[in-house]
Image 1 (cartoon, rainbow, N blue to C red):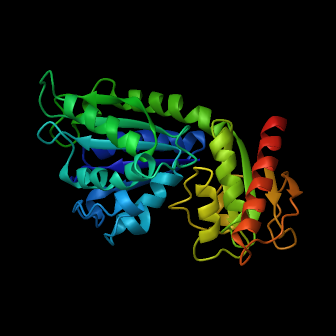
Image 2: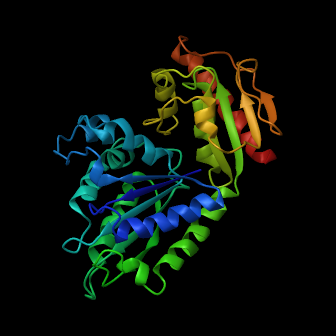
Length: 322
């Protein structure tokens, strides 16, 4: 599982960064994979309102959102938004990232396709303000609510702290760091305890991607889904993406991975291979089953549909067994 932190403060090792790091350290200790993006260090252009995303589902701006962050937002099981308060809102740096998430909103609400992780993904916010105003966090809470809806995450709430201004103030707070650790246990533990299942094919561009998407869509609360390939392709198969879209499942922003990249430090409980059993890694103690599925790459769209329906049926049977 992946916990993704979006750190919006431009201050190096500031209070926001310290609070988020406390959460992430605890999440890692529990057993999660974690990744923090210091948004200020990324090349993220503001939204230019081209409106192409509302027609085609993609933003034409070529920056770190397009090459990295869109993919990570789709991969994450838990997304953390962390920002100091600037004029009753988030920083400009993280606001640019939020505005560019219109791409996800458009795919869901304009194009009518849903990413497989939407039902199970979670979102949480950390916000720190220098003053003690009663309405200090009203603006960021609304921003967070609609950001998480756009990226397909259930907004579970926030930890907010007033009168945190000077560097290191958060460490002097009576409960902030302990609350961040407690929240990490609350949010991460149920996800870490899911059964780990990996789907493997040669290119990780077609069959294993479909299997992982169906498993995530139907049972992402019970299965920590991974997929990889023995010889990963450069990109996912476009025909596969098209036939999955017929099922209203959005396969955008998925990248083929090696088996090692998919697994990371974890060891799967179950592994399903699809025509690459001789070339695929063997995991100690993992039950491995081969699904004899033909390679659909280069075949007709009707052939791809048959593979899709076969994979979906196998996934539904697997979920019944689990």
